[in-house]
Length: 99
Image 1: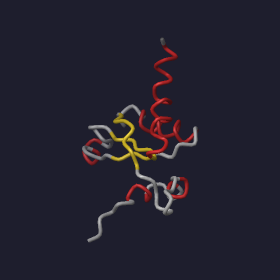
Image 2 (image 1 turned 60 degrees about the horizontal axis):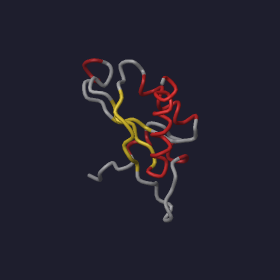
Image 3 (image 1 turned 60 degrees about the vertical axis):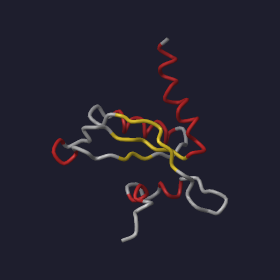
Image 4 (image 1 turned 180 degrees about the vertical axis):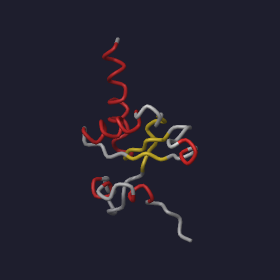
């Protein structure tokens, strides 16, 4: 059985089209941005914010989802490697605004 290396593209059919490509036309490597709770909806809010700033993103994680209805251990959010620093800056911006 072939490993599902592009499993994340199945959740959002247009994500693969928005995802940056490398020089060979292959999808750029995904880098882990953060681990966030799914209970309070923060993961979905973060995905929406990133997409709003033109950074494609996806979440991975489902431990506890069958029993609890959400990923009890949180979900990991991934972005393209070339946009990782931009995404980190966006997540940090609200913290700086509170100071």
